[in-house]
Image 1 (tube, one colour):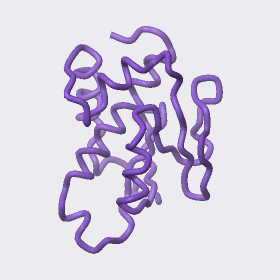
Image 2: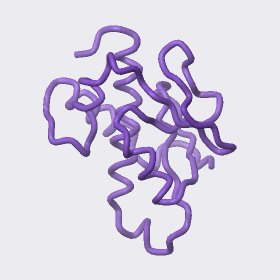
Image 3: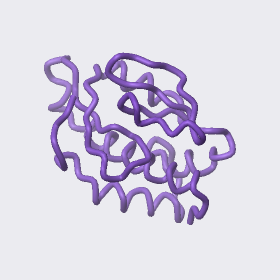
Image 4: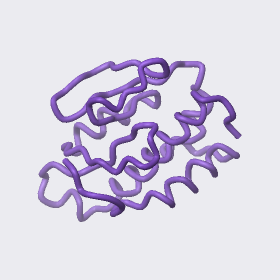
Length: 135
């Protein structure tokens, strides 16, 4: 189980990524080809802000296991690096030192373990409809 601050933040961000992946799997979200709302994947568990992205924009973030999308201002500068800054969101990159945790908690990788279960349990608590639908 992650015990350092960086690991705990990454686990929370992974939980938001899992929740977004669950929503992305809903085929009805993609029928009209318009922008879809995704949860901010910041390290603040109470955050429920939404980011409007096209399916392609979301997939571009998911292409790198170290990347997460956050609302501007939700970056934790001492734990992550901004790799892209757009008006609606920023893409952050986690350090390579967290690679094992990031891969273990990525729903697109077939891994299981303590971190995987912990991130999935946090994602269960988030729920896709929790909080205001900010975009």
